[in-house]
Structure formats: C-alpha cells, structure tokens
Image 1 (tube, rainbow, N blue to C red):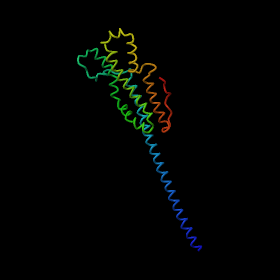
Image 2: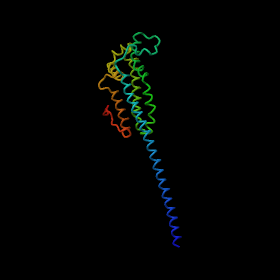
Image 3: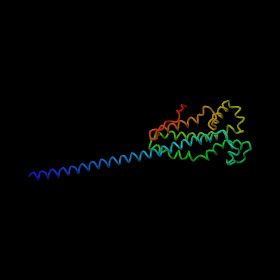
Amino acid sequence: MIMVIIKWLFSNITDTLESISIIIAAIFAIYSVNSWRKELKGQRELGVAVQALSLIYECRDNLRIIRSLFGYVGEGTTRKRRDNETEEESKVFDDAYVLIERYERVKGSFIKLQAIKYRFMALFGQENAEPFNEVNKIVNELFLAARRLGERYWNPKYRAQAERDPKWYDKKAKEEAKFWAVKDPDTIAQRMDNAITQVEDACSDIIGIKPSREKHIP
C-alpha cells in the first residue's frame, strides 16, 4: 500500500514539475518575444530619429546657402528666357532666379526630409508632422518671394507704380527679408530653428539629446 502511495505521489510530482517547466518556458518565450519587439521598435525609432535630425540639420544649412547675399558671376543665367525680354528685365529675372537655381542644387535634402515625414509620424505621433510641414512652407514662401520680386518689385516696368504706392517699398522689403538672410531678426531662420527644436524634442527620449537652442516666439 505504501509503495502504491509513493508511486502515486511521485507520478503527480513529476507531472506537476513538468507543468511548471512548461509554464516557465512559456513565460520566458513571451518575455523574449516582447523584449525582441521592444528592441526592434527601439532600433526603428532610433534609425528614423537620426535620419530625420540629420536631414533637417542639412536643410537648415542649405537654406542658408540658398538665401546667402553672396554669390558668383553667372548665377541665375540657367533660367529659360522669355520672348521679347529687354536686357534690363533679363537682369532682374536672373537675379530673382538665383534662389531657385540654388535650391535646385540642394533640393535632395528637402525632398528626403518630406519623404521621411510619414515614418516619423508613425513612430512619434501625428502631431510631430508640424516641423516637416513648416520646412515645406518656408521653401514655398521663398519661391513666392522670388517670383514677386522678379515679376513686380524689382521689375523696371513697375517703377511708376512704385512711386504712386506709399507701401510699395515696405512690401518689397518684406519679400527681400525672405529672399536674403540679412535682416535682423531673420524670421525665416528663426522658424527653421523652431522646426529643428520640435524634431529634437520628439527624439529626445530615444536619442538622449537636448534641444540645440531655445524656441523662438514669432
């Protein structure tokens, strides 16, 4: 009888130990999968964060090049000529086209920045699309400023109108402040810095960085 009881106990203990082993193995497997998922997600976040920051820093530097007051002889001459342009008009149109020409040489960084926007939103939240939108908005405003200056405010055809409009030179100065990085404060540069700060804030936990500068209040 005692032997039967011992065999029964031994059998149940063995089964229990086997069950415990299976449970422990399952728990370990679940933990390993979750850890792997977290690690994989962290790697994705880190990769996208580094790429986004690198691109927006590059865009800031390229923006300075695009808006630089200093240039070289022949800039703007790749512009396609219009029919019946006067020599004076050609000079004005070329001067305004300098910004577009410079952008064309460095546009790759701006295109790549916009391309990564949706991956960045997917990992860091839709609210973090704003800095990418702001950079795109800045570029569009620069294009518009170049067009307005070339077509109107620098155009010799409008000299008579400039004399009649008391706000003409204020309007011209407003567009030139976008076109060239010479005015202090430079609102375009400030907006770009703010966009960078927003991306840095979004990435701070994953990369462990602090914003490079304080956010400017327009």
